[in-house]
Image (cartoon, rainbow, N blue to C red; front, top):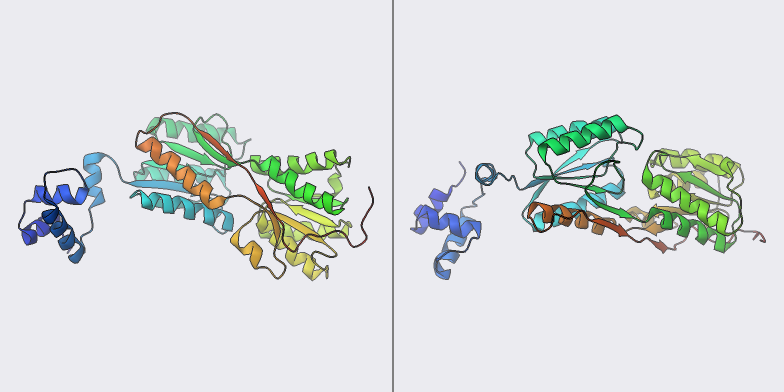
Length: 344
């Protein structure tokens, strides 16, 4: 049977009110000696606060919801880690939901989290920009419940709320420019899902860099991927057979798939075939030839999005804020000048 405030009060020889005040951390006229005594007894008895009962009084569950598209993607795992760390440091718990890149599951997960009485929501949407009916329904539910929300990485048109993202276009530009500076001219691109803003911006950055160097956009060496490992495998096979000397994969999961396929096709990574990813997931530097990639501070983005939500919940601000992080290029072993350097 769980320990109650009444049990602690009995052992400590003080009132239930005194125990409640001490354990809640509120200011009160209780001596430091009594305060320390109550806290020690609570620890010794392994007292666990009843958040449900407390929530009935405060109308707060001290819980936030997090909806992400793909828990198997290490980018989202790292993002979730940042959210959870910031939440725990502020005495909040996190309920995780996975949408498997399915917009209808965003709606289903939202309803589940509302039934769990979460105080606020952080979401990386799986709803695509063209799925206006899903966006409208999502917005209607948020509005009717007055649920504070922070959107991360991908936009939901028509929803005005705090937003945290990376300059994806600049990242795509940096990745392609790096390959161009090494001397590559035939650079393939494995994009992310066409309907996602982040993917479109990374591809646009690829095009910007080619335009800067006076090279045409060749759709024949652009493969439309889906941010998953298998599309990196498929894309690399097609692009290598079309004689590209380098590939920009729009995320590290696809870059890892491309890396695997290049090895299967007996391409020497770095010397015969250059590859650059995007995200800088922890696994990127553990490959036999560590992956050159575009770093985005995923953990910090997670922490920042949680801080923004908690600021809303605590009434610190009512302003709508938009934070955009800058990417950085991390050069490792998978990029080098082409074997027979082409001349511009």
